[in-house]
Amino acid sequence: MSGRTEGGAAERNLRNLIFAFLLAALTSLLLITPASAAKIDDQFRAWLQSDLWPQAKAKGISKKTFDAAFDGIKPNLKLPDLVKPGEKATTPRKQHQAEFGSPGAYFAEKTVRAVTAGGRAREATNARTLAAIEKRYGVPGEVLLAIWGRETGFGAAKMPYDAFEVLGTKAFMSTKKDFFRTELLAALEIVERGLAPVGAMKSSWAGALGQPQFMPTSFLKHAVDFDGDGRVDIWNSTPDVLASIANYLVHYGWVKGRGWGFEVTVPETVSCSLEGPDQGKKISEWAAMGIKRVGGKPFPASELKAEGFLLMPAGRSGPAFIATPNFYVLKEYNTSDLYALFIGHGADRIAHGDQNFAGSWGAVGGLHRSDIAALQRALEGKGYDVGSADGLPGFKTRRSIGTWQSKNGRAATCFPDAGLVAALK
Image 1 (tube, helix red, strand yellow):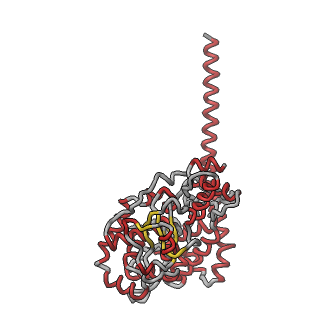
Image 2: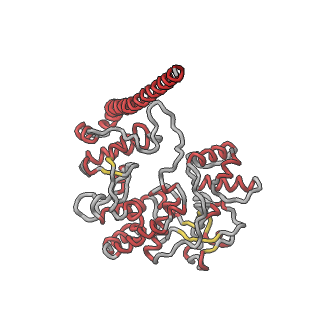
Image 3: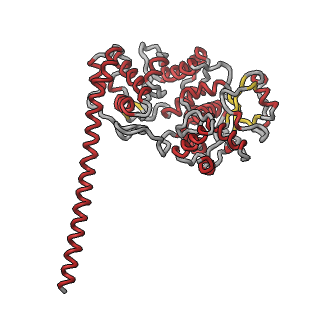
């Protein structure tokens, strides 16, 4: 009996000791996290005053504007792609931006139809404005409507972030500090010039402003007063929103009278590694190689002598296109092939009715971003140009995959998959 009692006491003591240890560890974690956050807050405030303020002052920003912009602002540690002080940048495992994820999911009919139905519903209401904008800028109304709908649901989407919190956080501790520092200074300039008050500077998680989702530098360069009220308002004025989008596209080279591209079929004899804006050919040359428009339609006679580019966003596992230079102008709005394709496709549907792609999206896009980055680094090690080993499968990565596959006796698919990741490790 006494032995049992003594053993039970020892077990209880051990359990109590373990419990005390775990409690201490948990308490320690709870204390460390706020303390770490507080330390980052202090570093952020010091950075604002000693680093950012001198540059802002040199650019003509008043102390009043500067202090108002950052009043109560702390770094938002929940934003993606941050590098905390003392840490090294790593490729995130997950993909936060839909434009670089699964093509099939990006073109879900519910998503596309919300833009196309909404665009058609607003086409008649804004007919005079759209006609006036197209006359001045040469950009079709359906393109403007598609961008407006995709960016903010025609202004319905609420911007939940403070632009100075987002841009300040990212300028201080993101993977693209210089980019966001420039945007942060531009945001301060917007307020300084009286173009918008601090309280109106609401943004997306990336720091984009207003209904067209302009970064602050784009606002300063491209936003226009089209309703004639004497001020630029991309938050509330539909004419200003639509004309600003058109002005942006024209700045990047929109070609009046040309569309964005054509869905096509690509025979196996044409390599998917011919994709890209640096491998253009006359559309008549693509046609001579056996590339045809879907549905048996011929390419317009006016397009045959013009330059076109092979576009295969999912490699052999999705629809294929011959894109015009205007496609790459759309891509300047958001540097994603899927985004530009969504806008072009959405504009076509707004103008001509809801008809989906003839080709279907295969089961691609399921890899983690970090897996794709590892594949890209492996290809770089073999001398291939993937653009950047950032985990985003752009056209340089896709065509490099196709070239490697062909050289190694594999069928060229031009898109990353788990088997390729394993083979290239």
